[in-house]
Image 1: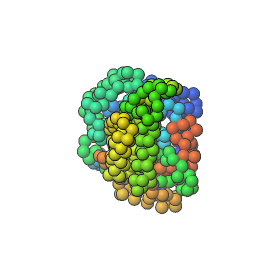
Image 2: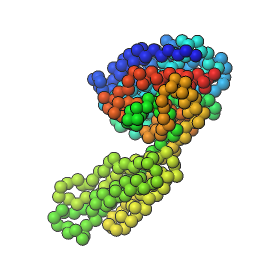
Image 3: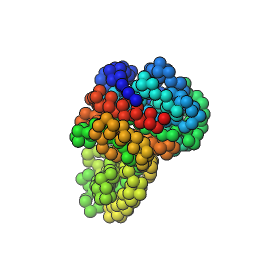
Image 4: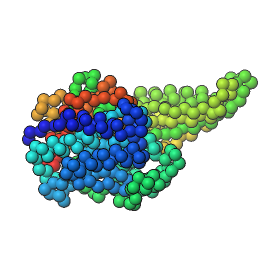
Length: 412
Ligand SMILES: [Zn+2]
């Protein structure tokens, strides 16, 4: 098979899609179900239809563009990613996997390849949690990880429900129809920018993802006693923020001492009440994001955090309450797909390295219903989720070649 990837057109398409944004270039902001998101969807659909793909969208707005194989009833081979973008983002996150996936299909079409299994490009709804506070909404529902009732209860930042918002965007069917039937996909593979600096640092152009880390998040409330910053002497204090400070460091230690570098924990929010210079903090809310590629190790770190909370609460005479907000299960990528990806790399003498996806992606959820894997390309300085996010045309094209050959191998 002789593949020629139309790099210039692909780069031009990435640039063009980036202009469909709520913000001035080079900033990309594309929040799910807004007018801009709908315009971007229509733009992608037009390109898929031009490539002869049959497009459908499900009730949550996941888009499927199918190149029907000769054995149309057999499980399909999927690829794709997302086009929604957080506020003040860049052009490549998600988009490389969508437009790169489309170009992979077009290059296979040009090569004269005829798939036995259908090849399907997916555009997942709301990979980013911006609007409804939960990421990978589309793939959670597709994989049955999220129940339709849970989705129906979601309310967006501006106070309107998901049901209302998706209806306004033209997606009206029951959410029960979103879940994929068993065996729908034979395989799923997602091309994505690394969103970290490792490939660039090692000067290796491709990363084959072996496992995808998954986050758990907790809310922690600490209740102490307030008072006058001058009037209450130190022995009498029950300072909720001092307890919080100890707990934050205990959280850091829990991750650092888990036994693997793959455990990471972050306290990203610390709300202090009443938040006055001359008032002892009486109440603190913390959020904890803890991630790992191994579920048991992550659970152990969370148990260590809870134990630390008990000790600190006792020592400081405050109450500490932990609430689990969300816990996703890490995924192992499918060895057979990783093998197909590495075969293609070797054929072209592209250097590659096995790696862990530290961010989570729709593939995390697709891995629950199909053999799944991911292919990473470098991004400059590891930057992502910012306007100066950049992936070079050479790196993108290399990723598309490997993706296309892998799709062909899986769909043959
Ligand atoms: Zn992404």
